[in-house]
Every structure is written in C-alpha cells, then in structure tokens.
Image (cartoon, rainbow, N blue to C red; front, side):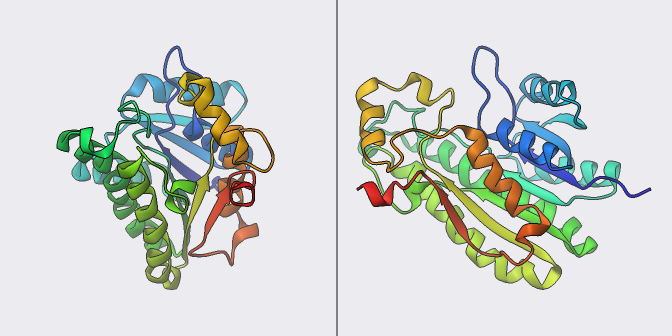
Amino acid sequence: MVSKPLAVVTGAGWWESNSPGLGWAIALELADAGHEVVVLDKELAPAEKSAADLRQKGFAAHAMALDVTQAAGAKAVIDEIAAKFGRLDALANAAALTMHRWGLKPFHEITPEQCDLEIDITLRGALNVTRAALPHMYKAGRGSVVFVGSVLAFDPAPKQVVYGLCKAALVSVASSLAGEAGPHGVRVNCVCPGIMKTRVTDKLPPNYMEVFLKRTALGRISDPREVGRVVRFLCSEQASYVNGVSIRVDGGQTGAM
C-alpha cells in the first residue's frame, strides 16, 4: 500500500480567541489535496487545535511543537517526522513574526532585540527547518519546499523595514536554493501574499486598511485559503516544472499603484 504524501507546515497553529491564519489555510489546502499533514507551531496547544480541526474535516493530521529559531530543535523534530512517517514530500514555511507586532514603529524606534527576534523567526526559522528537511528530500529524490514571502519584498513600505527585509531575503533564498535542490529532484519556490484577512488585519485601524484596498486592483483583501491554494499548486505534480519562482498573490496590487 502506497502511503500518502507527507506535508509539514510551520506556523500553522490556531491560537485561542483568534481566527485561523495562513499556516492553517495552507495545511487545509494540502490536506484537501491528499497530503497527510504535520502541523507545527511554537506551542503544542495551537498546533493541536489546527490538527484537530483538520481531523474533524476528515483529513489525516498531526501536531507537534517546534520553536523554529532553534536549529538543533528543528533538526530533531524534522528527523523524528521523517523517521515516523518514512517520507517528507512537502514543506511550507509559514512561521513568521507579523509586521505589526511592534505597532508599525519607525525603524529607529525598534530595539535591536526586536529586530533580532523578527529575523530569528521569519528568516532564520525558515532556514533552520529547510536545512533540516532537505537531506530527507534529497535521499528520496523528490520534494517541494515553499517559502512564504510577501509583496513587501517587491513594494517596500515605511515602518515595515525588518519584516520586508526578511521577506525579500526569502524570495532570494528560494531562487538560489532552487538551483542547488533541483538536481536532487527537489523544487523550491516562494509565494508572496498581499493583504489577507487574518487575526493581524482584524486588529488594523480602518484607515490603514483603506490604503491597502486602494492599492489593490480587485478592491478587496484575500482570504488565506486563496494563498493556500497557490501553495497547494506549488506542492503538486501540476507544478512539476515550476522551480525557483516567486508568485505574487495580491489581487493586482502593482496594477493599482
């Protein structure tokens, strides 16, 4: 009997009192596409809430805790997953520290500690998990890695300097790493969302949302599942010759500027 393809999604927990985020949406789309999914988040309870939701929908899902900033911990968890399930077919790096964590402060008002934490989670965390996953994919001769970038990688915005830096770096990582991983049968791509309806945007002031809406050709913000469907495509055989690209999912933000 052939086992289901296995997908790992970081930052996919469903935190209490908040709406589910992009990580959950990606996990849902990959599960719906036929993957068995392992949901990872810094704390086990949110990860288990997401996994339980997927199981209730009839999908195969599991939860584990992982602090992506810890390289040794990332290797231990990924090695455990690969050993338990015997395969690792897809990795979606959705863990990030949101750009609004510090209240959209000017760069000079953000402390070095806050900068370091943003970089540790959003950039270094994705590198840690991917570094741990690649040997397993290389050994199998197959796999798909998807980084979550942002339109801010292309359209810089004030008061989002460090977040934009991290997302731009991930776009570069996807492009460069695709050349290394391709000969091993592993594809590496990046999805770059625009504004989405999540627990973050739920807390934004109305005037801030109006700016985004005016800059978006479709005149609305996206549902996280609209971004998740692009990740689903990138992890599928339909994207078997798609490697090293960054896909903007922003409703036509460029055309509206």
